[in-house]
Length: 236
Image (cartoon, rainbow, N blue to C red; front, side, top):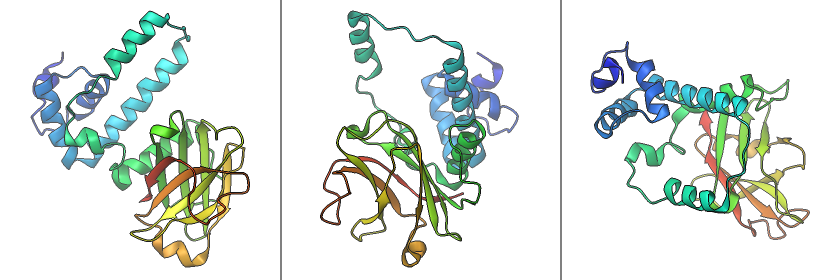
C-alpha cells in the first residue's frame, strides 16, 4: 500500500491519479474508501480518472486472459460471494446513473477511441446516454449519441440481443410525459434514427429506454414489453 493511499483523506492533487487506480482495483480500506468517495462527490476530474482506470484494467484483463468454464460447484460459490447483499455508499448507488456530463462524455470518448462504438461520420454528438440494463436486460451493452443540430440519434448495441421473435424499440421519456417512440433498433450493431423536430428541446435530461416489442413495434403506441435498458441523456 502506498504512502498516498494512507493519506486518502488529503485534498492534494498529486495523489489523485494513484488513488483512483487503487480505488478501481479495490485496494483501499473501508476508511480510505469513505474518504476517497467524499472527494469523488466534489471532483469531476477524479471521477473521470476512476472511469479511465476501470476501462484500462478491464481491457487489460479481457486481452490477456483466456476464458475458463468453472465447475458447477465453483460457479455456485462465486455467485454466493460476488452477489451477496451488501451496504453500499450513496455514491456507489448513484454511480451508474449520475455520472454527469463530464464523466458520461468520457465514457463515450473511451468507447469510440477503443473501437467499442463507431459513430456515423456526419454525427456530431452533443448529448450522450449510457443505457444501463435492467434486471430483464442482463448482458446488454447499449450507448446512444444525439446530434441535436442534425436531429438524429445513433444507438450502438455492443452486446446482447432482443429475445427471439421480438425487436427492440427506443423510447423517449421527458419529465412526466408519456413515452414517445423514437423507432425500432435494427438487428445490426448500430442504428441511426432521425428525430422529430418538435422533441429536440425535450432531449437534455430526458430518459432513453428500450423495450422488447413484437415485430413491427408496439401495437399501442406505448411500451407493451419488458423494459430492457434505460439511461439519462447528458451533455457531452
